[in-house]
Image 1: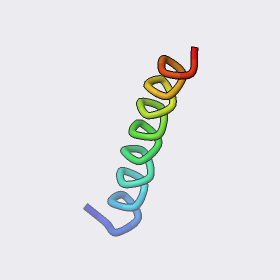
Image 2: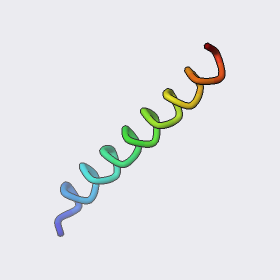
Image 3: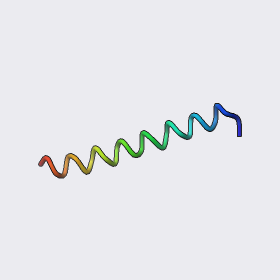
Image 4: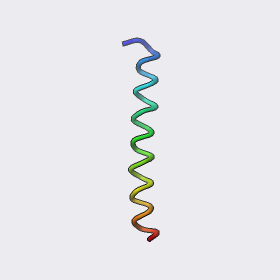
Length: 30
């Protein structure tokens, strides 16, 4: 894989983690 592809995958995985954390936080807030 090229460094660019690795960077895209890293950003994608971070976005998924952020979404998951957001859902968990919403559950606690509600």
